[in-house]
Image (tube, rainbow, N blue to C red; front, side):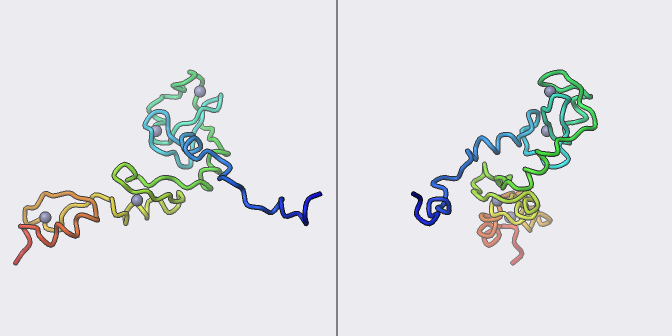
Length: 144
Ligand SMILES: [Zn+2]
Ligand SMILES: [Zn+2]
Ligand SMILES: [Zn+2]
Ligand SMILES: [Zn+2]
């Protein structure tokens, strides 16, 4: 017999989804960026991102079926529940952020590349936010 339903309320031993595989589903097969609503789909249900829709000229690159004005409602709903890797993941950011916070996070992200604030004085250095703080202090274009 179960003991006072303890087993039922016990936490899941593991996150019940393979996150890497899940997040892969949201990668556009053409540009490999993460899709966000609206998410167009072909007649068969293959999805692509809105930016790539004009590129395929109404034909699904995977199955050659029609890509019309239909969007994939379920993908659109699920992608609002999933946290996505920051766009600067390759540069070293390990944050996962909900879609609605992604743009904001990326604009403040430590790994966001920025121009040196002394660009106008002739500095053409571009570094991630984190390294820029250090650079600015030693920038040779910094006015004395
Ligand atoms: Zn795309
Ligand atoms: Zn298709
Ligand atoms: Zn980030
Ligand atoms: Zn500089």
